Amino acid sequence: MVGVSSRSGESCDVHQHLWPSTLISALRARREPPFLRGWTLHLPGEPPYEVNPADHDVAARLGLQGDVRALVSLSSPLGLEDLPASEAQPLLDTWHEGARELPSGFGAWAAVGRHEPDRSGLAELLHGDFVGLQVPAPWLATPRALDALAPVLRVCEEAGKPVLVHPGAVAQVPVEELPGWWPAVVDYTAQLSAAWWSWHHVGRGLLPKLRIGFVAGAGLAPLQHERLNARGGRMGRLDPGVFVETSSYGPQAVDALVRVLGIDAIVRGSDRPYAQPVPLGFGSAADHAIDVSNPQRFLIGGRP
Image (spheres, rainbow, N blue to C red):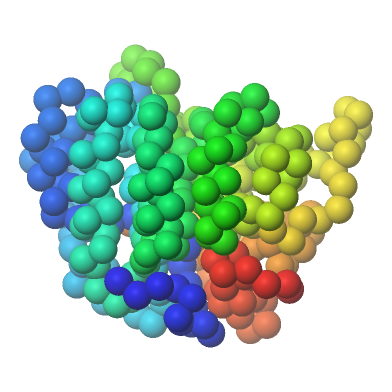
């Protein structure tokens, strides 16, 4: 697995998921959620999900993405990072070992456990091949929660590596009451919105040099800045170290994000295999910014 910083000028998708075979075996060995039975995924707060085996075939994924470099991460809605440390760490180690074996064309985000996080181990991962750290959005659900997480995020800041905020596990509910799309449309966007506002309120004061990105347009939370201003808050100046990616959204939503945050804050992400890249139709200059130059600034720094 080759570091992203060595591939300047290449198109990059910062948000995909691909399970190494060793992680699949580890999930099948579990007896409590999260676990796999065959290819059926069981999670505490979501309906059983039938995984397509082809979605986690490395050669097939390379064929789909063509010349685009894909950064893959552990699927935080699995809840592996939230397990007790004795359960979480072996699974996270399995993820990191499998990710290291991925061929050129991929990069990977590191993961860390919520309980007893291994900060020295994270530092080693970040000084190695991993492009940064992915954290579940519920870990930033309030300003106080973000303050508690700051020592972990500071490891990334000190390493000069970014953080990617991704939806996490959802609360347990009677799944028969909800359609299958409910968690992704309702729970995930709410988690991301809360994480965005926590960062907006205290993040930069805690971590002045950290680069941070939010998947799925931060649940479109940036579009609420007019309401923030109307209710006594303040948007402030645009922060060149804060990014949002485009997964599951198309031209309407991305255009609205650009109007609030500017084009320099938008990076390409697809959430493949759960969603696919969507053409935005903004023209070649915007495509280059979203696919190439903005991801590079997110990953390795620099000014727009």
